[in-house]
Amino acid sequence: MAKMIFVNLPVADVARATAFYQALGFEKNEQFSNSQGSAMQWTDTINVMLLARPLFSSFTQKAIADPFTQTTSLFALGLEDRAAVDAITQAAVAAGGRELHEPEDHGFMYSRAFEDLDGHGWGPFSMDVAAHAEAMAQGDAQHAEG
Image (tube, rainbow, N blue to C red; front, side):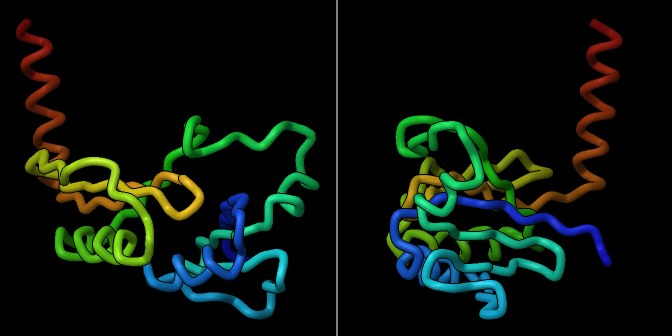
């Protein structure tokens, strides 16, 4: 079996959250979904489990943080280009999400950020890996000179 990741998110309304993630391009895996949770597949190995808050709370003894007022994690989505970053952010906003800040362009990396309906933060980005390596090397060289 391939290594996989399942990100579990507490949600207030499973059906509404499912529709939001489908609008972003996630596919619902019916085999692992029911009224208490939806398995949303991003790739063959990356999945987001949208779990009703009572079900989610059964997996932990800790209090569930309010993602509208506290940050526990941010999820970055690497995409093929700027157009894909813009498209998923626009889809998120159109589906009821909230854009968190203006686009950021660092030359080698372009990113945006949005919250889903339950306040979970997502950061789609595209990166030119070769340009990033060059920028890092220049930064190291300037640091060595300083």
